[in-house]
Image (cartoon, rainbow, N blue to C red; front, side, top):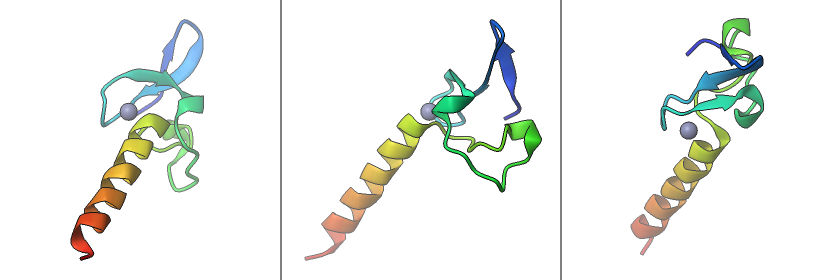
Length: 63
Ligand SMILES: [Zn+2]
């Protein structure tokens, strides 16, 4: 997802929640080029949710 400028603020639409957020709401990732603003395609909020899901999945496996 490329950078979208809204009201003079650079941001992107999160690939997971489909909500436009400013670039600062996306974790930095140097592997993403300048078109992505060197940021992840998923916002910090969705990263947190994903991390939680991963942790829960791991917990349910260990018995
Ligand atoms: Zn998101």
